[in-house]
Image 1 (cartoon, rainbow, N blue to C red):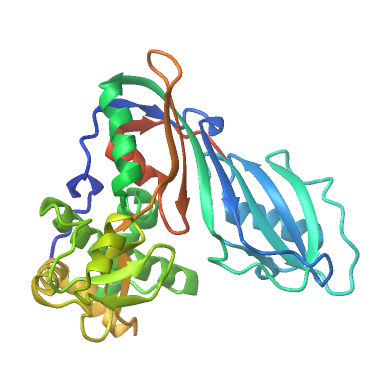
Image 2: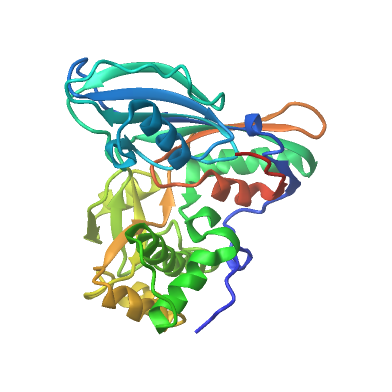
Length: 347
């Protein structure tokens, strides 16, 4: 089994003509979360829209728990947001029979934008999309080509790689997953086990996607493919209909790749062979995922990028703005445009 893990080995779908820096300060990486929930205005759950700067989501949840004197498990959020950024997201805290508390002693990294009552807890994954505004600094290269790539990406889509964050610092989640599956390490906490399982599964998916990019079929219809609608989670086999081809071209649906687990692959033919071939490079991961009871699932190989704009502010600075669906990574889009180093000094 391959034991050296590096994101650099994954194929790019676009030319990546720029070199530069990003996240020199949190304000260079702005994320705004969008949810599709109508808050009722009453109920035992207090929902808070929070702007956090240079802080991670779990830390903010802990600060909210401290102010409201509840266990951290009673604080809900839709997803983890970047630490080295200015991000806006919702939290909920269960306060049955209690008045709205004061948040005056929250740390300065946390700002409450609004608060409303609701009858349900905010659950993980309950978000529509994330809006990003990124400043890329000290850039050099072909700016015209980069702008053209953004136009093409809006029309063709973005490879739906799992980002480097998924795999932990220095790919540590993958290393620990391998040690766990080989029997030399046992994670004691449930959240640790979840991280390591997700990392191993995501790595196999990325391998499959990289192979499809190398074949130039990551956004194409191949015999044996399994498809998923944009924004959906259910998958279905190719029915050979002309309508399917039209919807594929319109980014209404996408080819999928395997999320490894127990059971038979949904794909057939050449697609199935490719997925088996890539998974076979990581037999320890495959066996470990199956032993832990995960079942076969699918993930779209590409995603639609909404409202993508490329603006050159001066000779060396670029501003990117775009929206991605839940589960997609802004850093993956950056990797299609170039190589960007970062200086991260944050909480």
